[in-house]
Image (cartoon, rainbow, N blue to C red; front, side, top):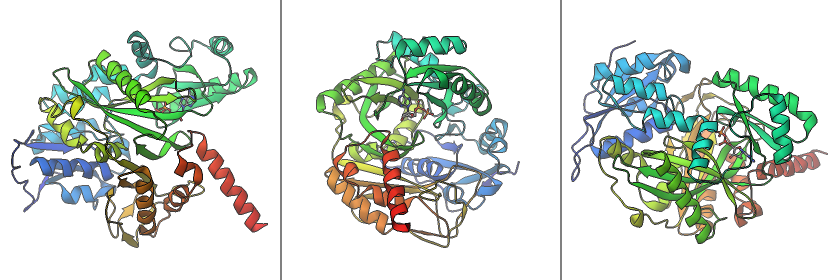
Length: 476
Ligand code: ADP
């Protein structure tokens, strides 16, 4: 491992009005979220340590941190997931705390324990909470005990194929078999009828074993056209838990979010209140603290069901920041330093509307990754536009990591204004040299279903089919 490099002229200034929560924080991540954490630290007068793999030598998070440490070669297992190297980097730089971002080690209970054993503050909840909520089957059992509505499904894990068949008979097809250790939309299989079960059960288990090293699976009723609604929570070490309203994340492809917004066009004030209150109750049941999200599926009748909890900051947190004017990452740092939440439930007001488009380095219609070197870049600006990205002129997008290269976020007084701003921002976003999903987002922003708010998690399938039919007609 290379030694730490201290830069000149990058010392964090002292922050007026608030004592910095830490002297120095190491960010165990890369890309836009590493940069996002650095920005929060700069505002709070906290010094930063960037870690990077050999593929990220010229990355923006490295440039803007006060210190930098190379933690290994490009593959994540040897760098961003390499716990001994991360801890060594924190020790040689004297970082008091580690922010894990999202992905990588952010929901790794063992990493939290190692940090604690080394006297380093992990910016997130403790290992027990991470473990309990990270195992989806166990999380559901906890939620059941707390009186949170659950989707009809298996009672814990599925023992074998017979159990799977019997459970599906009981709850009714279609059903979904899910990996208990699952995440990122992987390890899930939809089963429409008994003859599909044996195959689905086996593939879900072997996929889970390969992806997560754990082949335990459970079953849920598969809802046909639900909406994905999640609630942002923040809690401190004194038992205060507050919700920051909901996010709508129904525009998805293969169970992966593409567009998120806040507030959701699907909720009445009464339903919003019920979902948010349920999320607070759920978080209280596990003694939750720091930032977390509870995800629900909402059916057409207005019934909602707990799906999972993410014990970290989420990709889509900016939409909540824009409508509540609360800086979630700064608050994470304060909470980790043992401070009380800087706001109460009454202080949280959702004002206006925010939409986020995830810009991925992918072919917009085939969704195949398109890594490469940028040849031109222009980020849009103007009223109501925020961009969270670590891209820069001449940046090289390595094939090794996640394909998300920018989050384009539009804020408006109303949903219509946010959409109008998103359209013109997408029109003036220039990324050349690689393919991105920008044209896909631009098309969605013009679609009557998106504009009216009439969509579910299934909607992208219809949208893609419409587009394919149009293309076939144009060619034929
Ligand atoms: P991951 O942790 O891999 O992201 P989730 O459990 O959060 O997986 O589910 C991701 C997406 O999969 C949801 O947003 C939803 O679109 C779909 N999904 C999951 N469970 C169900 C279900 N029971 N019925 C219908 N869709 C589901």
